Image (cartoon, rainbow, N blue to C red; front, side):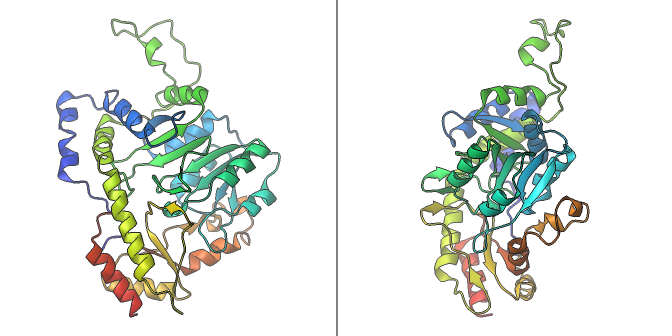
Length: 369
């Protein structure tokens, strides 16, 4: 079976955790801090990184730290993962479902302009499956409307357009290290922040609201004069997960190049025809794609055809505005481009663990179907 995602960690990743097991320090060790420093190299110099337990908790914590309240509205794509959208509702805020553009899987700015109002507090730009969106226009939109600009880069880390990496143009961005991501661990997430005040708040809130320097005395006893300014949560990343990620980051450039090779093989050798079409990338873009998209009016037929030949493929997400629990939050008849895209979509494997030979096999099957 050619798997859609690579969820296996290699032996050397496990060897890197040996020290953690022997030390007994699974939390509050040096690996998390090391990871935050390592990740910061991939973003602008003024960005700070806060490591957390998982994507949903990271999204929840960031929105809470930014003072998003009950009934505040967040502009967010309907074609999305529940791990990214349910934190909005769990906080008591309201997701306002935004449509895709017609010919490329990105948020439709015109739809944002129609749906923004006085209750809108933030926009979350999801770079769908690693297909990067030009961020400058959304940065300007958010700035002009005085709302928070957040990038969801949970499966697009490293993608860029015109030399601008995803995560660099926003107020905040969110990464995921779930086992099927490009950089993976047992689990984990990170918030990349350009606001020092919010960064400090996130660090406190990820562990009950504790300020580490004031919580304990030098002898290790709890400081009886310490008071919580705000009650937080336990959303810390373990040193075990961070240790794996620090090791995985060493292979990031190599793996990115392998994904790029696979994408180029699809783009150069897959023949668009009456049965299916390819989606063109932005010019001057580099995409660290999670999957490779094609579209077809016979998408279900092609998906079943490939699965019978041991090639895993999928439609990736379900339009969130179609969930009954979410249906009251927006009109079901909205997001027409999203519905059309989802119905025609086929997500093909392109991860770094797949050999050139296997990608060419998928291409051959599709070209002769």
